[in-house]
Amino acid sequence: MVAGEPAKNPGRGPTYPYYVLGVLFAVSVFNFVDRQLISVLLQPIKDEFGVSDAWMGLLTGAAFMVVHSVFGIPLARWADRGNRRVILTLGLSVWSALTAASGLARHFFVLAFCRMGVGIGEAAGTPTAHSMISDYFPPARRATALSVYAMGIYVGIMFGYIAAGWLGEHLGWRMTFIVVGLPGLALALLFYLTVDEPARTTTVAAHPIREVVAYLFAKPSYVVLLGAASFHAAAAYSIAHWAPTFLIRVHGLGLSEMGLTLGFATGIGGATGALLGGALSDRLAVRNRAWYAWTTAFAAIGSLPFAIGFVLSESLWLAMAFFVPMTLVTSMYVGPLYAMTQGLARPRMRAMAVAVHLFVVSLLGGGVGPWVVGAMNDAFRADYGDAGIRYSLVWIQSVSLVAATLCYAIASRTLARDMEGTET
Image (cartoon, rainbow, N blue to C red):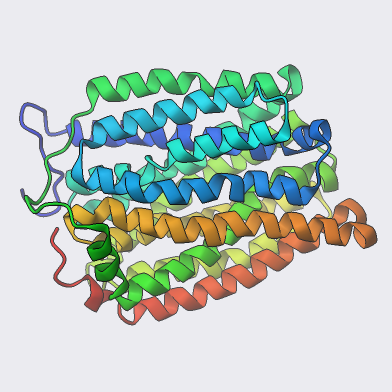
């Protein structure tokens, strides 16, 4: 294989890796459409079940993230040893079916169990997809390819906002889950029938979990990146889960209007930033691999002023003028972050490297961040009413993004050395 060119599977044309990347992008879109529904429909679900913001924070955060991270480890182990096409097909089928089933829940805890099931299915997604992409694309193109996959996050959030906003307003939150969940089953069939299991870049057997963990945690940059990504995720998930409720409570938007407003802003800003971050870091890292870490540090600290402006602006238009660049800048971290994770791991531990990363980051960032905002909302309500959500979001953004920036800067010091010697 020529350096910088994608891998070619026997019997397939030279553009086939790009087709696979396109289908994986679609899988990523469905992943985050399904994941975003609960955030958009948070207020009507809360009203129907009569629970507090703290409970809704647990539903959007920990109830999903705990099982997502725990099951990610054995599923990634399976992906490093088995057929990734089958694993991802099963995962997509499970999370799509349980998203639809969420609309049938008649009790808050039944809905929570459905969301936990969605988390289990989605645990098969990112580690498996990253492993496949890393076998289809060489290191010099990997951050860009992973960024294309990551664009699905923001396109999925966009469609999640728009679809859930419009469908929730016109059909109710229950039917929204059913309508949005079922098409994922068709995508699972398409994926299974048209995507090949890529050839492994090494014939070495998959490594035991204990060996993978010991290998990764012996690299200082990997450990520090876990902290950086956890703080970054706390900021990102808090905005993603609570921005819809923020616009409804503070700016008085309806579900449909809120969905359109956040949807296009997130999709355009996030997808552009994700692609820009991957392409830029791939270009700069040719000279020094530490640029992967410096790009993510810029994405963290550069988004903070825009995040504060979004939350504190009294005008809706001014708030959204801050929201677009905030989303663009912060999303630049995704491609380089996962390129670092893949670059620090050996080929037969790539899925596990992502799973361990997601285990820590999902619990500490995605699980804790939204819950902290919900708990702070409840605490601030006595003094500030619905406007208390402003101060919850300012606090979580400020603390998390500054801490993430410092951790990325520390990781940059040992990153190039830690990435040496890993097989491509």
